Length: 114
Length: 110
Image (tube, rainbow over all chains, first blue to last red; front, side):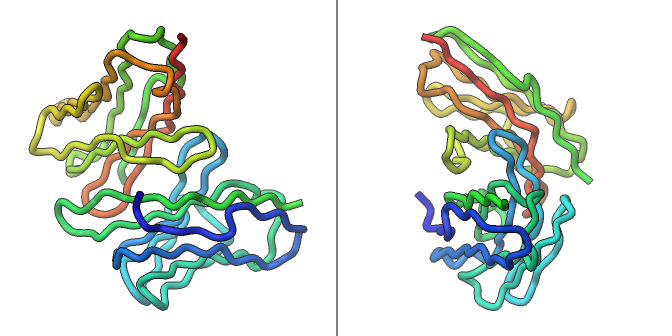
């Protein structure tokens, strides 16, 4: 298993709360990604980063924001959670470069907003 | 941008039979094609991948074929077992970002 971690694994929270989902990897990977996935459904890219101080929005519009201050960490923040944010959030990383494109996924955070 | 279509959306096979999942992509510059398996409640895990300079790759019961001209690639699982039941995702990329197919639910009936 790749060393990529996500916390919390499960989160139930009320509408309007601010939440931060943590993602960290100990492999020194430059490239990191956040995906949103409803159970058994397609993975939608919502944010990505190619290195420290680099962040980009993904293909799926999201009200979340991300930061990349350190190589190891790529937290995702929702300023005001809504029921429509209920989903699973998966973090992934890879080193980048030719022959090193394989993305490794974290275990995911299941978010339920009441 | 890249678009990946995956078929079928669900597939039921008898244990021991073969399963084939097909994907097409739109960007001819894509050069990396991984396949992920996601069991219920688990993270997606890479099971096999192929690069554009190769036409076929095998790993025990799993094989992937790539047709660059037609822009499609397929996953073949032989001698299916109940533990092969999962959701399978194909993806394509030409650098860093992966574009995923919508997934195939594979059920292996024993």
